[in-house]
Amino acid sequence: MDWVEALLRKSCDRTLTKEEVLHSLFHMIEINENTMHQIQSDKRDFGPELEELKQTEIRDLDFHLKYYRSLVNYINSVHENKIFENQH
Image (cartoon, rainbow, N blue to C red; front, side, top):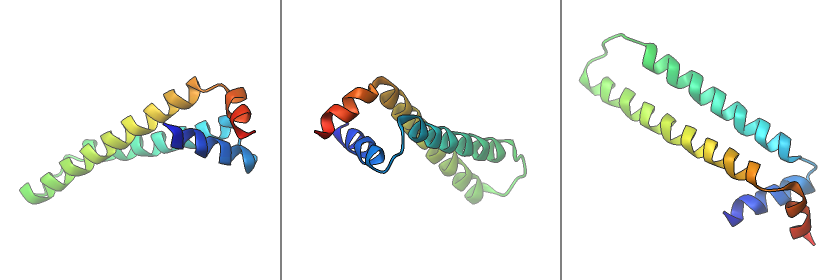
């Protein structure tokens, strides 16, 4: 995940801290979870074509949630000193 470290370095250059990057990811997770909950709790019957679209949307949201969570885990594992050391 070299590109993630590069992104973190650029974030540091622009004064974003590791915590700010994580905060942004947590916000995206929250938005995706809320959207997923709204879609899953909507019990209206729109017919088979729209049901298929609904399931596709749920799969997409699930993918994004896993992606954002894996980024959070990875970023949490990177020590902030390492980010600054790699800049020089």
